[in-house]
Length: 556
Image (tube, rainbow, N blue to C red; front, side):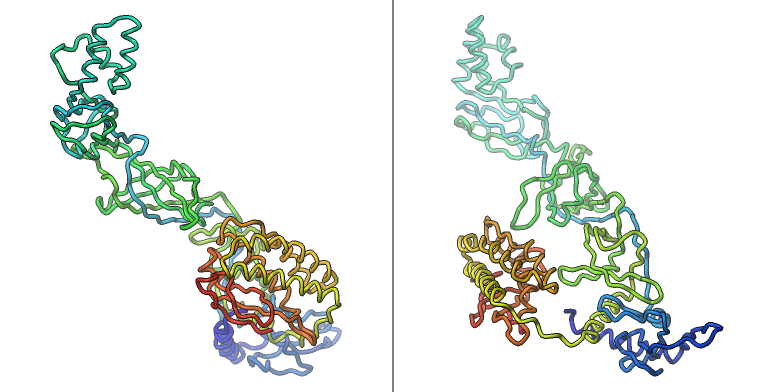
């Protein structure tokens, strides 16, 4: 049901506008054939099709001149999915349309993240053997070093003894000592140069394994260290990683290779461009996001890197997709989980279409179902049309007929279904995942019985079909997953039982509504309903103990 504000807004605008139109625009005349006057069947309001009269006059609701409907003609449809407007009303309401067409889908995604160094080019320099740092050749953080550059002179009795053995031995024994020297941290080039090393030199050089920047320093000259102790840390800042969080709704767009423009406060007005190289496959269920990595070149300028380590930065990702069927975003009216658009059918008639949407671009949205190429969708005035359609459904609805009496088999199937639905909801209200998983499988059985019992009720066919689609409450891994399953099941269940709560002998069941389900179930509609046994106190299955009494009772 639309908010009452929409209906009031429609009345507030439509009634004065219609009066204006009737006072300034003459009612269209209809030519009669040469053979004589055509027979008028009745007079009808184009704005409120349910208003009919056997005499000329004005609409009793809006004052619009009634339009004659001649023999052989079809009057204005009064269905809730159709809205009829006169030419003058189309002008007054500034109705605008545009054709649905295949077109590229573009979207600009603004992101924020951190600039970090390339983790594959980050090294810790540790002591391979116990010893003393005799001299540091690189003794401050931020120093730039080259691959193979001497970082420190290191004195280690064990290492010194192994070097002497290498010089003295030959053949296979020397090879064995060489392996031990590699284990002590020497490079192949250092081992080959040992025969020329002076016998009275007591230290060995520790060389940098990569070129880069000193990130941290943990030792000083003269310090004794033990095996495995951290000495220095080096990061290669020639390429940097800009990492940001991509949320679930953005993942269909993001792919490796996309260009990203990056800006940082440390370089005002300058843009760095990189490409997405990696999308973390480990999805974070808490934030509903995953990390995306962009690789950036980071050149040396005047002896320093442009991009500093761990800078905050903003990114602009320009996303695009091949041509898809799309319409302007202003043509879509989102009514909870349902999206609708109004299509110009010609001669002032507009039909309400439920559309299935795909990806949302900056200006247009992808349409997966509900429209075809060439359909003229309303981009301006559609909100008033939707309010008018709601009024049409309210005013044109015929007095509801009493629901057929339920047979004993039907009432028994309903009672069993209500008990099962109540047990599942009760388990979630107690935050009891084990009880939910135990009660869930019963849903399949009772839904099948319910569908069989009401197979002859055409008015419940669609609702029962949706309930059958949602009946598989598989074992949930956690309460969040369980509540997401339950929302689909409960929404369908309430739709089925709502008509059965009316009539001479209604089904006795309570229906409650939570006003903020989307806070408990991500990407859910704002409101959600559930069933409980009659006479029971409210117990919210979407929040459980956190807000057990959150919700209101829904009257039949």
